[in-house]
Length: 301
Image (cartoon, rainbow, N blue to C red; front, side):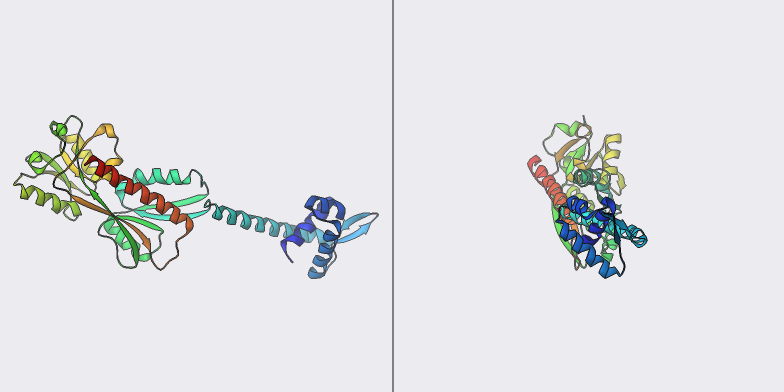
């Protein structure tokens, strides 16, 4: 039996006549009669008896009707899901990301993505980049955003390069300069990330090369923490453009830092696994947003 037969059966049972059922379904009356006869042969019992010009459902028909309706509704749900998947409005995306973008950029981007995809469910898992490199080995994710070095092996990786900026509180004495050097910051309180971060040794070398006094007031895990301490204490810090873009512009002064302090993000997708159209759409949106910050940084330089 098929869904067409079940719909004909439901229409005849509901309207009580082949002619009315045919009109309801937009079919010819003989087509409905033939379909009901085919269904009765397949299931092995009679569904309707003629009585004074009307079709009288048999007791078996009433017993069968509930199961038929469940089948019709199930096929309808499957059809709807397929339609939503075609429209990229159904499915799940699992995203791993480091905390630096989990607090603002990613939630805002996900909300933007779901504006026209309200049935999409997103799982956002935030861990340190070190922990994320371990999680990516399981390949149980669609997209991961981690700080370089990128996780290996078995991953498709795209690296995005940035130049870090010097972040100063509004009204800082150095805010009038067009760029900041280690010499400008010599002896001033500076906030840095821990020594296992890619920027740490670059900054130390930059100060050493200029024989500038690196006065480390605080070392911490994340750029956002570094900035908030610098803002509260009147110090300075060197942060990535991605973090800077998530901070209210009225709360900080950003200046290019020379020499350049390089910073990389890795966009990761599991290899040896098919990528859903939905995850690919989000990946493209995320990629465009992160690359736009590269251009904004270059423009400021």
